[in-house]
Image (cartoon, rainbow, N blue to C red; front, side, top):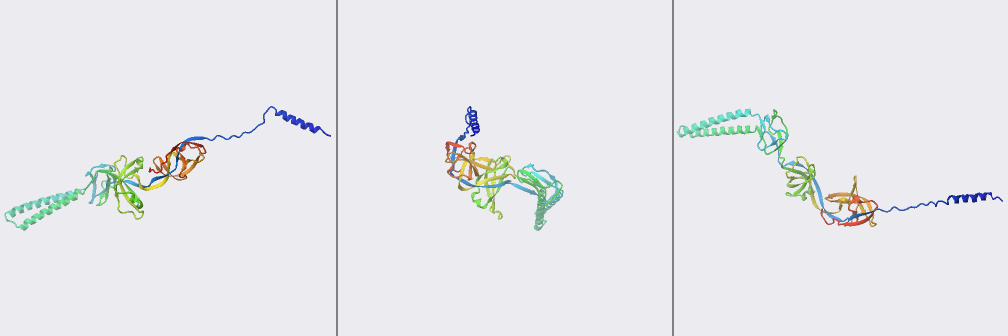
Length: 355
């Protein structure tokens, strides 16, 4: 009988017991992290009446503008204005060479003097019964013809001077001094910068939403987006058959910095529709994505992606991603996905109100 292996086993057990006598057995404890709780105000999503709005765009144009040309052919002797020159009504802008017409006027004046002198002599002779009535009438007609010829030359002479038809500013210069001006050839363009309007095209389906005399807020982006009060002055009766649009002209008030060619827009209301609105502060925007923190029945905030629509002052329209009756954090910046929610305030929804 062999007992040697048994001694080794007992010794090994004693050694193991002695080594662990001074330390507690190691244990692993798994404890759940405490859930974060946020105290927030929430709003319940409700169906809200909002106006159906259509945005119309256009460009700023002058109410009074003119393309100036000559009625006769002649060389431009003097060009007295440039682009940007402010002019008053009746101010001389272009002077054509008038030497030939000045000579014609001198000749016409001489003919009038001769005709008048002849008429005076005929009147004296007729009073003395020295000439016939026919001769006296011929002299009268001759005087009238000479006077008419003079007036015609004076009219031609006046056409050598191109004057401003109204007070305004020169916007375009198409000729230079020394060039030959032909009848009807555009020489200058001018406008009244103090009286401007927005020329906008409105679709035929939206035309019933605007009427002549309506006051419409017009936004000019170049002026910082501040709305101007425009007045609908004209709706052209004929539309564009290709685009099915009509031109609507909206007069604008005098505004510093407002210039021809600027982009402008206004909105037309076409009735009411139902949609969901939430406070703008509830929306969390990350690049091109938008989201809300929705509080479920388990009182837990969950981040949910949504699609935004129009903005109405302090509210924004939710097109998809949110259902009526769901609760949303009023201040999305305080939201934490998965956090427990303690509701401190239930904000009244904008249901039934028109923004």
